[in-house]
Length: 327
Image 1 (cartoon, helix red, strand yellow):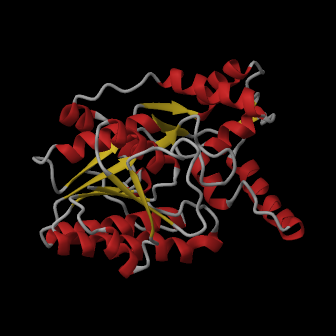
Image 2: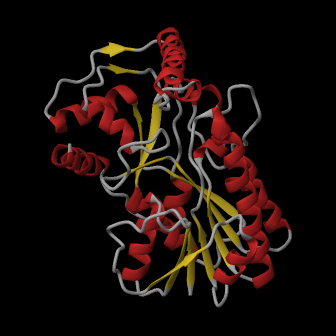
């Protein structure tokens, strides 16, 4: 039996679909308030259990008869108001998963993030060996994902059989179109008329490739106590928006947003949110990330698994086709 935490999420749902297709028996956790995604609704072979990662006893019951755990459950947010919640769910929840995996002798694959990896020096590609460091510019999400990953390394030091993946920006047509933590919101804003780009760059990978890489790593028992960056291509935001604009049949964004402009914009968005009661799509943390120029290496995952990633333009076309259909 395979356990997937966060089974109703963007990545978790795709992973479950692939596991079922590969013949695995799957148990998946869901919160009381979460909804089973349409792509999994009625899918035979999935044992859904209500278990919050912060509820130790419910989680312990979910571990019964399990030999492998994919830990996907996490809160993704770039709002300072969510920092405490991210600490509770991402860090304390991961600590409980690690503790149970150690007790039960279960193999664990933990989904971390590139946010928990250090920046490459002098513009070089970032690798698994780059260590994260605290500084005033780190987002609450980065801090929580780093501290969660440290819980897994703590388990490894105590004998846990575990592998960690650090995905870049995960994209795909099933990503939610709303929410500051969803990659889908980027494409939705572009579809709705976003007319500026930023100076930053980003690593991109299809959600299906992330799930496939995770399964390949899990099944290779010789791989343990290691982490792997998961990124297909590196692309500037300007190029990303130009390509997607072409697939959407609209002009590419013309204006480059400077750091000063973004600084003014997130402050204005914060003030407006006080009157509207709605959360701003642009925050200090997202503005900072939009100007970061980072490139991520993928040699280690390619060498370890031999995986062939899906062409990124194929994924971008699928995303844009969905946008043209639903909006």
